[in-house]
Image (cartoon, rainbow, N blue to C red; front, side):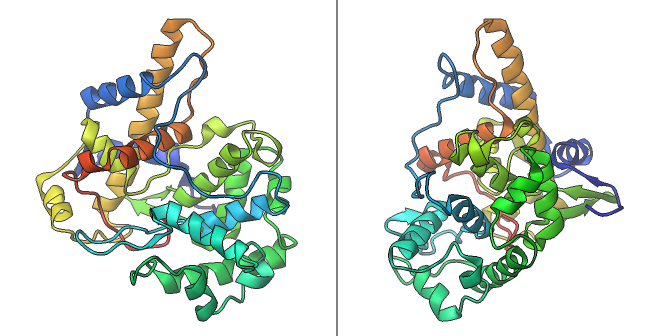
Length: 336
């Protein structure tokens, strides 16, 4: 966030949606998604679809914060081309495979949450930690090693070797923590230029904040007084669900590219529009949920954008077979 005005994700999404020509948002589909989410809101909160559980340490673990930080440092690009063998660990795929690999590493004695270790991690060490169930390798292996070296060195140089120092500086502000992350850790600086405007998408930076909030139940290291300012985490799976509900649609030209597994370049107009319109669509769904819950007159807590994102992400995993006919966009990069 330098002197040039960078729109934060909510405003960035609104800006992109206003000018998008490859992606459109549809009121009827937003309503459909909203109704589906409402069916999962109990007497007090949003119930997340059962899509399997991840593997992570107990909140009391002395390096729990740094475990979340390392996991989200590596939380990008798990997709594979149609019909290609997927990287799995312990039967888990995608991000859950990463969690399984990190959990296994700790049990095997690798000091993977310590920047003293992973800032100097070797190819052989990381290959052992990320070994899969089959011959498939974790995507972008070299980039992941570079990111570990970079973030580990920054933690050691600026933050006493632990991400808890960043949390103390943020003083329970999600937006302040977001600023600290994107200003000081380049691999989290997920920005783009669209129609001459600089935009912050910040998928991994925001999900890091939200993961800490969720992991610690909104308490201790996860207490943020402004968590509702965090938007959804613009990746490649939630847009797929939004298309499934009819909340998003793609131009014929774009849809043809996706069906044919044609890569979209990071920062390209089409890729930015998919991500930006997804952000704005979730904000519009949240507003619909707010209006609907007000009418009930109860004490049901309005789910924030991060929870809505997580709901849809889990919904996609639970109904993966139904989503197969809807192509998702594929971009190689470290931002998501």
